[in-house]
Length: 88
Image (cartoon, rainbow, N blue to C red; front, side, top):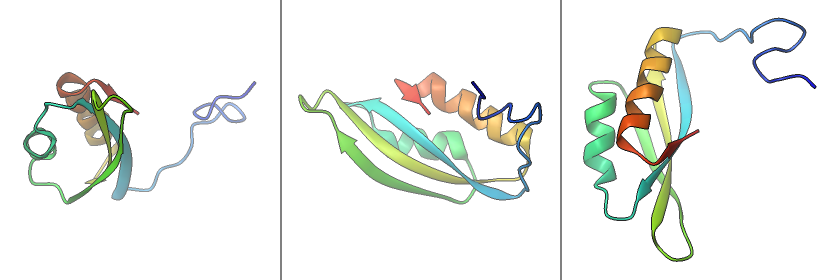
């Protein structure tokens, strides 16, 4: 079975800069706008509400951020993980 990052033994080629898509899930009481702004800093981004859980305990968002390189993309993923429940 092939993994998305290991097709034919090669990593996918990503051409930067690119708007990278993240799915971010927060507790319902979190201030997602402040958290996102803190994490992305001066980067250009778009945040769109995606879903609220059935019991309204969690809320998810689609986050699109302009990243300039692989290091920046991975650092942002790590930062988002620190401040949210889940990041995909």
